[in-house]
Length: 442
Image (cartoon, rainbow, N blue to C red; front, top):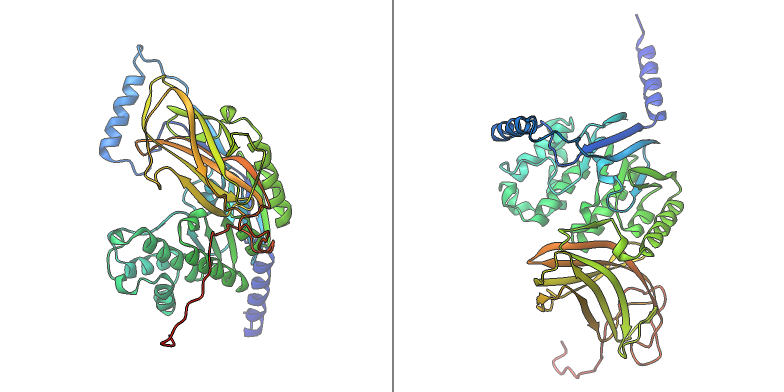
């Protein structure tokens, strides 16, 4: 028989050992997907019958079975994360970041290797992950808490704080299927971050919230980190990663490009990768999305006199030109074009879009140029990354993210020879000031 003192000592030692070991261990993780096929999970009766008929058709001599094409979303991923660390996982789209988080959240199983997590996991991988649309906000809070292994008393203790953070007090007993996307997102994050998980996993989903909500979420994650819990954070916003994370790693094409370590080293490597990619000719880029009936072949910037520019100046009149070709040799109709502008650190700056000015192109020839003229470029000095998109009938035909970089030099935007301090970057606003008498004192 052990004395009470012996039992307390054993409990103390076991807790110390638990705290000394990594809270997340990934060992040679790999995830393979078979293109054009669906797994058996959650198949309906109709899907099962359809799949059986298709399998029978593929087995006939007239339709030989072709080997299924597969891709590796992740290959040989290994790392260890200590308790209390805030880890940024960065990389371009398609690098495998979301797949990794789904494996760690137990949403999907790895094809190879294994992941071990020692603690309760709260994850926000997409809007409303884990919510049941027919249940109310109140019921979903208790459901998610139960899934995390929390007692009813623990959930009740945090309930008011969750609802206040999400700002859904008036709708808490409404089925979440009637929530707006913003309400859905706020409640989903509040649940994931407030129900005291030892591990909080947050994907890029925060990018869809407004600026105020994003700041609140980042503030909440900082608080979670100071409480000694572990945070995994995926984002394209390098400023947020730099401010929030204590360690970071870079994924590229499903593999670790920069091992888990110094945040600045990881960010520098990621930005260098983007610079390498943006120097590739757009016609040769393979990392594009869309139907592909229209393809972007080139991009250039011209000044007001029609001279191509390598460097631009704040306040300059410029003409952004997207060169395209129609792949099926037929004119395209009801076409729109957009240029998304981001800072070098990944923060969204502005959007140029023909839909915003209600100027769709009713018909495009087989080859041509879509032009967007900006009379007074409002960007502060610095380097910016452009995302290029062409749509037809609101369907994305070609979308190249991180397509090109542009460099903005200091210019006389205000016509006074004065510029804001370098610490006050971003965009410039054309403005005028005046003084008015106010006799009533208001």
